[in-house]
Image 1 (cartoon, one colour):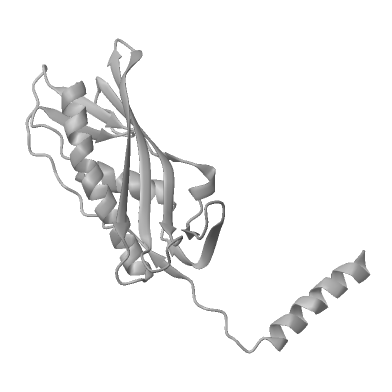
Image 2 (cartoon, rainbow, N blue to C red; image 1 turned 180 degrees about the vertical axis):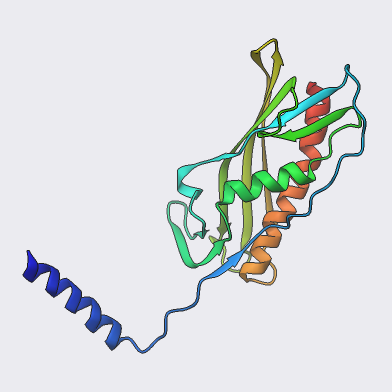
Length: 199
């Protein structure tokens, strides 16, 4: 066992010595964290929506950027990553940028304010699509489920899935992140309209 371990270690060292290319530094990227404050004063008749932390499909949960290169093949880039877990970044962005109606307040999951609605987000796609290498796109899909809470009983009000694609121009990591941000901006507008119809 010791001989095998020694051989593996030696092989690793020899490979490192034989390679003249330095290991690229890890670059991290983050969505803007600007917080939009709500100035509306709620009355007892108004609605409070609690936004739960987003879940994410396991294949897209890695902090490293993911590239789709064929209908079945995805590649992970270990040198370009989200600063924090992507579902946390997206939850924070939605929470800070979703504009609900003046008679509604959006709160985070850890806020102790009583809420009569709960919004759950499930991220089902998050990748850079390079199937067409001449026209790469930032792809994002999120399923939203809205629940109504009445005396501790939750009832599903509705569900919708929003999907957006944005061209990555120029073709670099900063533009990919800008593409994800553009997708989220489009989604927040559609989501706000959907919530106001469902409440």
